[in-house]
Length: 143
Image 1: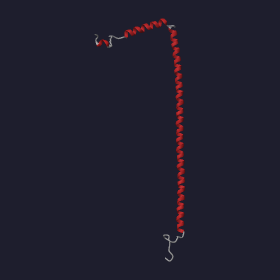
Image 2 (image 1 turned 120 degrees about the vertical axis):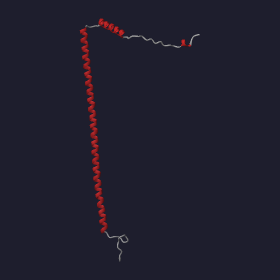
Image 3 (image 1 turned 90 degrees about the vertical axis):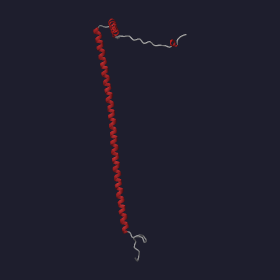
Image 4 (image 1 turned 180 degrees about the vertical axis):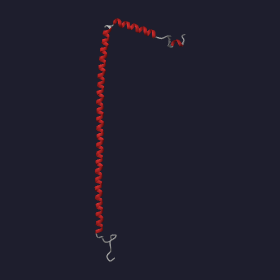
C-alpha cells in the first residue's frame, strides 16, 4: 500500500547562495558584443541617426506642448467668458430687482397718499355734513 503523503503534490523550494551580478554582467557583455558585430552602421553614422531621432522627438514634444498650451488657453478663455456672462446675468438680475423694488415703493407711496387723501376727505365730509336724526352725536330738536 501507498502512503497518503505520496499521493499529495509537494513543492520544493531551492535557494541559491550568492548574487546574480556576475550573470547580469556576462549577459550585458555578450549583448554588447553581438550588437557591435551586427550593427548596420558605423559609430559616427549611428550617433548621427540618434541625434536626428532625438531632434525629431524634441520637435514633436514641443508641438504637443504648444497644442496643449493652446487648448488650455482656449478653455481658460471660454471659462472666463462663461464667468463674465454669469456675473453680467447676476448684475442684471440685481438691477432688475432694484428697479422692481423702486417701482413697488413708488406704487406703495402713491397708494398711501391716496389713502391719506381719502381719509382726510372723509373727515372733512363728516365734519361738514348734517347728521341724520338718531345718529350718535346728532342734536335732537328741542333739546
